[in-house]
Image (cartoon, rainbow, N blue to C red; front, top):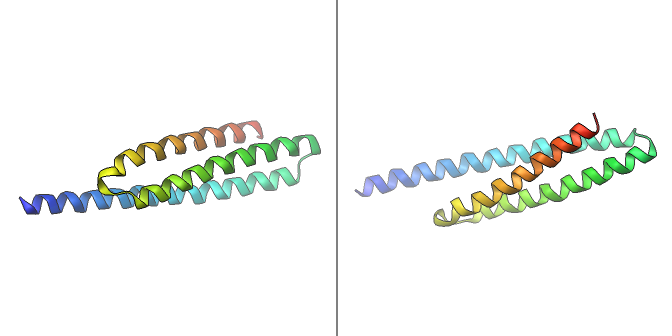
Length: 107
């Protein structure tokens, strides 16, 4: 029976690590996408530039929220991890929607 617990623990740690790596990778991708929006904003006309920077600021705030949730995930105990993951997924969804909206608006 002890072996079963050990296998379960190993699987949970692998699942956690994979999920945390996925979030890390997505944050890096969003950083690149925000940099692209900033470059487009720099070349935009003044009135559009303001809209770009408002969207970028909102994206960065939401991204900071995801970054905080990722740190909480990494620090969470095995027992609390699933609950913290739910909060991270909610924050993640907000960033995805905000980025999609911004990307659509400035195409």
